[in-house]
Length: 396
Ligand SMILES: [Zn+2]
Image 1: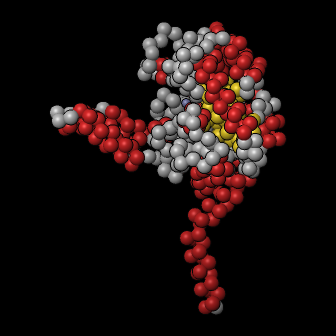
Image 2: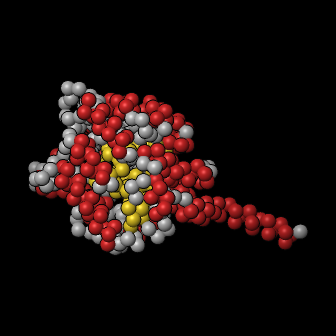
């Protein structure tokens, strides 16, 4: 009896302390069996353009082949990006082609590591334990330079989503930054007739309409026109973190009707209200107080002290994995399990949540979802199945 009782007690203790490791073990297994699709990564701009080779292990940035595979990333949408000021005097479109070419070179040189896909069928055929399937997303309508022929040409070069705007509005679509009043003064919001023609053409070409970064009016105008499900490739929930880059509950409900998917962005300033408050403080009163202390002596020193203090405070305010799961949870509770995915924005964000340090950290998210009570089939939808449904509907 005594032996049985001690054995039982021992098992109970192991069970208690073993709960978390068991989730982790189950999580890792499930994670690597499931197909993981991330819809937004800026490593072409952050790493490749800086001359770094993603096929090699890198110490900089958030991504490289080895970290993708450690993180179980099967399909990565590589973001093609140029800012409001073009990098080259030849302009935005030229910048886009340069970035697409940099991805082409990577795939051509390392076919054992990276493979292209331009359709759902190719994703299914090419997804492989040891390879990363590369898809192209163009982040910002300014890169078509208001020319449908350039849009066609980017589609022919493999573009499978177009984010209608980045932070900057175009002549034909207004951005979230500008519509929120934080940027340019607008005379009219939403999509122009040409903007509507862009959406129609994207549908026709099998290119997904991406509504991250766009203003609310552009969002609703695009949903009224598109005949295909859309993506928000890297945005989170406004009601948990009210910033212009996130989607409001009414927008999420409209997305549900469309059959689209919102892919949660990991950027702490889109996840955590507290992080945003710290950012505001250190760019406002916090900055003033540091400058008041130091600038009489030396402005350069004031600048340095302010940056150090801000970096330390923001690092301390970083949210954790549970906060990212809160966003997923909110979306699932509001519009169901079929409309959420992942678009972390790695290599495009200056801070990351604790525990989600780079693309190799994804298995921890699966473990956290299991611990939150999500089933295996729910987690597979979040990791990739939902986005693949949208890919299939747009480009079978
Ligand atoms: Zn972005």
